[in-house]
Amino acid sequence: MCQRIMNTSINHTGKTSVFITIILLVLLFYAALLLKFNSKIALAVLFSIPALVFLLYQIVKHPYLGILFMVIGTALDTTGRVPGIGLTPFHIGAVATFFSLAFNKLYKNEYVLTVPDISGVLYCYIVLILFSLLYSPSKIGGGVDFLRITALVIVMLSVVNVITTKKQVYVVLSVLVLCSFVLSVLSLRDILGNSVDLLSLLTNLNRVGNRTVATFDNPNNLALFLMFSLTVVVSIVINSNAALWKKSILVLIAILVLAAIGGTYSRAVWLSTSVAVTFIIFYSKHRNKILLSVAAAVIVFGLVFFHHPFVQSIFMRINSITQVGKEASNSTRLFIFSGGLNMFFDSHLIGVGFGGFPHYYSSLYMPPGQLLRDVHECHSLPIEILAETGIIGIILAISIVRRFFKSSIRVISQLNDDPLFRACYIGLVAAMIGFFIDKLFSTGGLLHNWLWLGLGLVYACIKIIGRDASKYNNQLQ
Image (cartoon, rainbow, N blue to C red; front, side):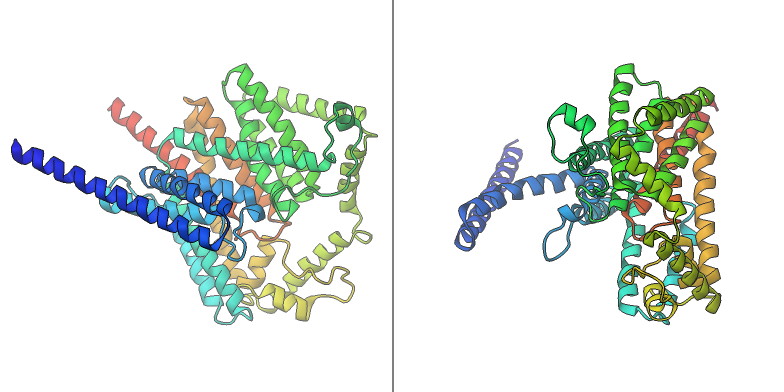
């Protein structure tokens, strides 16, 4: 008994000493900041350190919380970058999630590692990229992008394994929708010219034609981020049995997000969003009524607001697709597509090397008639893969996409017992459909955060669905 009391006293004394040591170190650090900077900066850092330590501690306990950092970091984009080093909350969340998963697996053995069915083909494609760097004209730039892709694949695998429950999926998607809501408000504020008068909000769009970016540096990336949340919200409204008041709130959010997507003037995302929403409606029990209602709403909206400047600018943007000769963006895309195909025909088996498209296009394949001379990145992911990794690369890429959609769509029929989770899952699959359609006409496909986050979330849901199905079969037996 005495020995137990002594051990408890010693442990308590040890914890107190550690606590006092930490306080002294923090105070010394604060004093150093005061000498270097002013008191406000020192005070801000002093209070941010405990908050950061607490958050990292929570991520170690619950690794899936690191995904929230990645979602928020993607939403912040350029705004969230630390000046000088380019570090963002996405990087912090990715590293914290990976090491938390490794710690819990090695020391607590709490996770059973799951590998998606696309992994084998994906690894072959990564090896092909690595091999192509041997003959790529952009070895340094291509090498950096190769490391980024490898890190994003690790992010995908981490997401698949740290998400283990439906509740965690709901938390991640809730943060995604919340971020999109805030971005939509910022976008509409930018579009509407900071007006606070309701009448002027409805009648005077004094910045029509300016593409909103919110926190992003590219309006197309903002539109793509918003599309991911829009598909989830629309799917919950259409395919779940949520309460009416909840659906009403989600409808308002969807309208705001849709308006913000319109304000980006991203034609590729408009197309991909339309296809994604159509996919969601297809899995609804009332799809015919919904399709008729949507068509009627579009017609009525078009007739009522046809002469409104914002609506007119959207129609003009859509009509610009047909103006190939007059619209520099369209003609440049056609030149780039043609150059990419010629690049493929000249090196059809293994391509020109990963990262080599901009170099060869600007030096050999850019025609004299291209007006936008500074645009030399491929605006189509399939053509970029064809040009840089040849027929072998495109076969592997098509195999990855085919396996993903075969696996993801097949399990939808197993979700009839949980309407909310089914709706969220359909929304995620629809978002991935939209993503791949968008990347038929956009840049940066393989390096986009949401490609790998989306793959990870979908495969995490498939894992949860398979686990629940196994439990149900065991109970029947």
